[in-house]
Length: 147
Picture 1 (cartoon, rainbow, N blue to C red):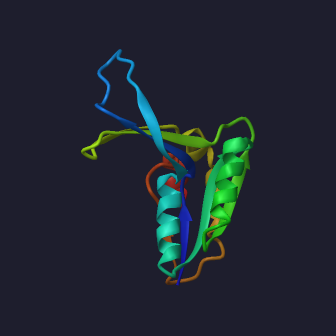
Picture 2: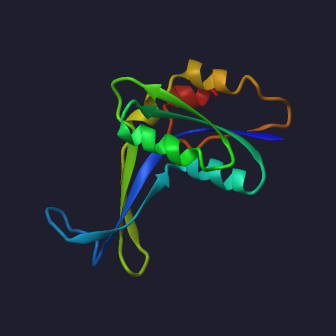
């Protein structure tokens, strides 16, 4: 069985804060992590680390963040097919986390929603009966429906 994961890739920055901000507030925090993220990448990495053959298709911009995403994915036991998009920035998330574990996530999705149905569907043409398609609901509605 092969898993085809079609979804987003992002760089996540996690900041520790003493409390989540109220509207209009400026608060201090400190960076505790910067790592590969995005629901699509997270699912692909977990499946691959569990021994499932994984092909990940994810859109990124032609930018430094997209390059960093590609570099980090090369360290994972999966096949990454990143679609580089012109005029779109790679997705990112900022996670505000309080000591007790509660968090708030601010994320972008410009690259994820720019993935076209044609490109996405072409990525899974190599699939066979019994293979798995994994989606996260963060692509455009038309791309999700086409897949």
